[in-house]
Image (cartoon, rainbow, N blue to C red; front, side, top):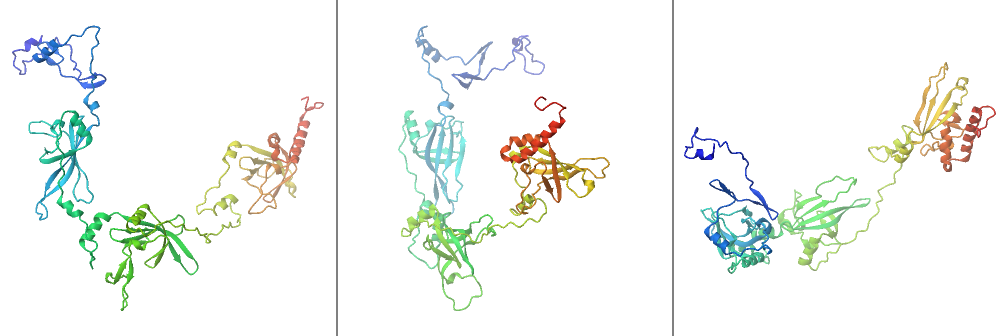
Length: 551
């Protein structure tokens, strides 16, 4: 059934038919590449059964094509390189300066207020935004007035274009009227390159409110009570401006004097002072946030004829408060009965004194470092015999003891390596003569463990006789003991372990190989005793008439 059957049928349910001959149901692609850029394709136009890629040409366009010179086969046509607007005009913005008038109601001092704005026009997408520069302590919500968007030009749906903008004109946006007065150099060059002649720039009219605020009060006139305009001037010009001095608090007692580092802040907005202590680790002092809270400190006070019942000083009795001229580097200043020595200040403070007090030299003073005689050398108490010497020593170094440090490389190299010796117990009792022990020297920890070999019907429980521990030599000091080493374990020597005496009778062959590899650390008589003992065992284990070389 073809599409012609649908012609003339009413478009109601039951009168519509599906074209059974249609085989292509795909949607045409709306994006394509042109000179390497992705651009949207124009929608196709259906005329009868033919689908055209674009709208049909007008007569004016056909006449242009007729008068164009044909291109020969050997001529190479010159095509201009195509660059889309979002690439060619990226980050190119026109900037205009202007203002708008804000009406002030119920004010006898002013009828309107002039507020300056900056208008940005983005060429890549013809969007605009209006931003009002922020002014410190203005009390007005400033910043971005209109976010970036296309601004409507009229009620017919048209938008503002860069061709509509010029100097000395009014820009009406969303019921507000902005007066464009000037532009930057890039905007001026761009407009001239496009053939638009800019008008003469205008000056932004003076705001009476800002002019009244900028008038400086007459400071030469001194009043008994501070004037309101003086406080306003200080708040507007001296707010967040602080002089910082580095000093030392000198504290003297009956025995000696102490100095503690402090930082003194002088606030220019209201002539107040606070003192902060510089805390040091393990100083033994409580970390208070402020040594002296922010307040006005009196310098000269009138004498009272009648004793006061309160410690606070009345304002009527204060003749003079501390001012910036009273803080001099290299001198002491007394604040509420505390002496502070000033030795340095920051860069802002130094610049302030150079501008306002050029006679005062603010040079840093070097402070000689005093030796602290209060520190004493640490005395380690004698060993009490409980636990190991290394663990007990860690209790003297810190309040929370840490495990002693070991030689990790030595433990990794000599892990599970030990020197084993056969020993017997030297005892006056006859039942102990046949007891045999294995003395193991652990190379990774330099500890010695003793194990008793089992023997049938001996009446003695065999097994671990002494767990791994350091065995000091007899006669060594308790606080600085000297422990047994492989150089002291000689065949026939006596090893005394906590009141028990063991005589070494034999050793493993690995002991001789290890000591020969470290012969520079072992005495010669120790190697000779091992060679004689182990050599005699080899000779006794050979068959009769055969030497060690023949074997």
